[in-house]
Image 1 (spheres, helix red, strand yellow):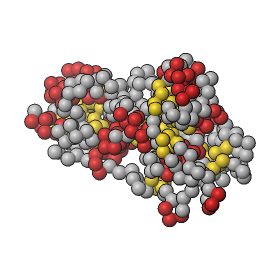
Image 2 (cartoon, rainbow, N blue to C red; image 1 turned 60 degrees about the horizontal axis):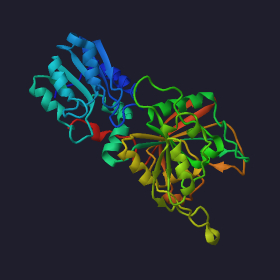
Image 3 (cartoon, rainbow, N blue to C red; image 1 turned 135 degrees about the vertical axis):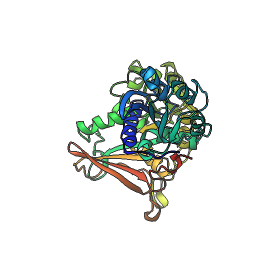
Image 4 (cartoon, rainbow, N blue to C red; image 1 turned 90 degrees about the vertical axis):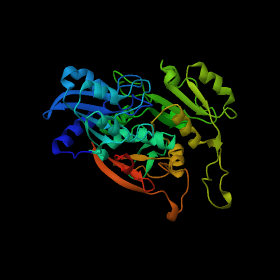
Amino acid sequence: MKTATDIDEKLMREAIAEATLGEGGTRPNPPVGAVLAKDGAIVARGHHRRAGSDHAEVDCLKKAGAAARGATLYVSLEPCSTAGRVGPCTSAIVEAGVSRVVYAASDANPANSGRAAAVLESAGIDVVGGVLAQEALPALEPFFTLVRTGRPFVTLKMAQSLDGAIADHAGVAKWITGAEARAEVGRLRRRADAVMVGAGTITADDPSLLRPSEPESGLPGMRCAVDARGAIPGTAKIFTDGLASRTIIATNSALATSQIGKWAATGAAVWDLPLAFPPSTGGGSSAAAPRAAIDLRALLEKFGREGYMHVLCEGGAALASALVSEGLVDELHLFVAPAVFGRPSLGVFGSFPHDLPTAPRFNIISVQRFGDDIRLVLRPKSHPLRCSPCLPV
């Protein structure tokens, strides 16, 4: 492979920006962006919009037309070299007369990984790989996670007071954070394939959980409520807003028998999942017996089989605590409001106890202010942000 130049990095950033336009709408395919340039000037831009539509490279080449001949194609992910719902992008690149291809990350799919360079170079096209692979990772990591683990990338979003409460003494949780922070949560929803909450959040707040505004193309956002016992009433907004077909209920048929038929009748999808027994939430001889809950690993594996790459969990406390305790959170977005609720109040991760030596720990990736609130983005120390697998092979 050839060596990248400064202009290559500049134009690759443009391709990576294009990729973000497809986030939340391409499952089970990755969001990919492409830019075609001649003499450092952009000729065309493209991105993948939804599964079955043109990949980013083809979208860009079609927009460029004859101008693609002799140009350099910048793409945020290694071009595919095998046929799926559409033909291989490597063939389209060769046919368009592109003279040079620069890509960021290598494909995580074993069927494609490392193959593009050989195919393109055999056609006389110069190839440069691994350019700004780390910067391309945020949009691609959900796809990589699905390919490597069989489950989606999980982002956990929680909002709390300064003293770690997610609701006041009366159980009121709307709104802990301000408008700017809530707008950022809307942006997080647009990037995810599905938003997930526990039954308590639905019964307490009756949220919509949908994206603030749907993209013009791509798949619509889905919402999932985890309810082992049939606590969510059929009058909840997720069933009655005319969009019940975008609702998933993760439940157990043995515990929620009376509700399953009612939920399904609304048009919602009902997933019957096995149960797990979380650790006791009490201490000493008076500790409460563990209460059966939905097996979250089984739920995420079901999401994976259905092609979901990115799930955003917005609580509540029991669901968030279980995900953290089981090591199923890939990224945590913790919004902190400058307020003190005092006790008794509901703690953000108070459902499961941890000893000091074995408590889950995180690395702080970034800190950002939204109005009066701050957001901490954190990664578990057990699997921090990294990109060694997405370098060219």
